[in-house]
Length: 301
Length: 293
Image 1 (cartoon, rainbow over the protein chains, first blue to last red):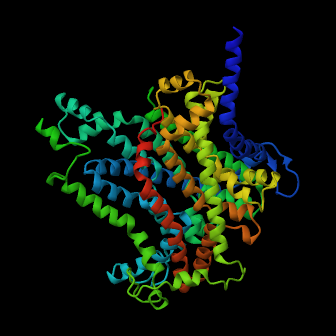
Image 2: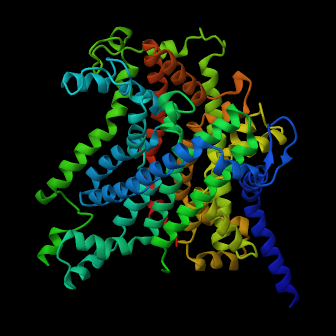
Image 3: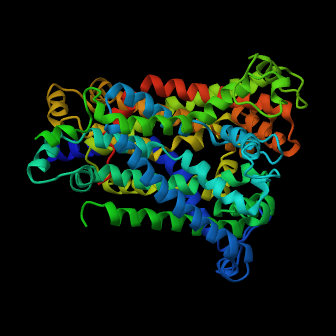
């Protein structure tokens, strides 16, 4: 008996030796911040004095007092998330599938072109979009539309409440072929060809049926991974509105998302307790959406 | 069977039936890389072409003057821009190296070792996949401050190191290594460390390449730690400098600045692109095992 227990303890210790560096950093920079965000959300904290416990007041204020949040930030966040999340997700599956229909060499080149926007930093891209959507007549988009006589006057694209949101969605979609897209492409390419052969013997006739009955069921795990990455990417992408318009809050709150709202309260108004409450709500929303993906794509349904 | 061959996925060679896919994908690719072509040409434009009306997409007389201007020392803060670049390189190299070490160790233990907390750690890591760092910027700032890491290079490095996606991808990849192989090595007297170094590491190179790309992108593109945790100008990174360029150009709509900003954007983009091109087959190899269950 004795040698096995010693061996088991040794094994246990060696396992912890392997995971402890990650676990320590993970605890310090993920677990502790999340827990303290939850704590701070129940306090009044201006980042100088010690936090004062005020119970649910921040949450009550968030729901009842914060007009900007209820009228703009929350609807904007949901609208943006619903357009960019499922939109980007379907787009990346569709593009991955299209890429799987062509031979290897050309596929590599075209996949690289489609993935390349995800390789660029958001701040670097702001340079490009700012010049394209520049508000005066020498902006590329204004110039193009004016030369086609579609518009007569230059439009202040990024300052206009009407156009900011659509521009944010376009830019985010353009930028959304990330890790999830690569996983889906790999997933499609790794489906055993015999599956299709069997499918055709069983009476599949066209590509649509092929996708529905064979491709998607065979790559459910990658579909789920892609979905979770899409959810996170979507809520991460919020900074784009502030970068494009150059202001936080964005003009008339048109592109204000929860992430911008947190920064606005936390780092511009120093109302850290309140900002933490918004953070907690955001984390819950992201978690909820990811769980929803699990429901939709999980194996054991 | 004829219909099966007509619809074959992952084909070996070009056939005329694929023209629709090519037509669509090529036009879409052009749309996707248009802004990147734009950065290239904008970065090489001389001042008079930047001012040109109507604006032109392609540069006529390319020059390096934007880059020269970018690196001229005439900045108000009097910090040479090469210092920012140097900081970025140090931070990125440290983050990439340490991420590989952390992710491979953790992924190995989570896949091949049995220990009490295994299930919990894996579950927590899965939940962390859904973590949005921007949501807890404030408490993270407080943690970094309490640890005394403001105005310290570790303040750049530590926040980038917990890479749940990396741990997850490595773990999935190690799962592919047969247990029998590891058991055989153990019978020959190899301890965990030896198994890890000599057996596992060489076999999971594709996954480590992928982790290094993800870590590289994260660290190289990151301007946030500079603006939050660093007050000394000499400790800030190139990505941060780049973000100051874009905000000032947005404010003043200064056209000469646009050339500089584009040059900086190009410097940010090229390393990402090159690393991805060199390692893309490894990335695809890793991604094939990336499914969540």
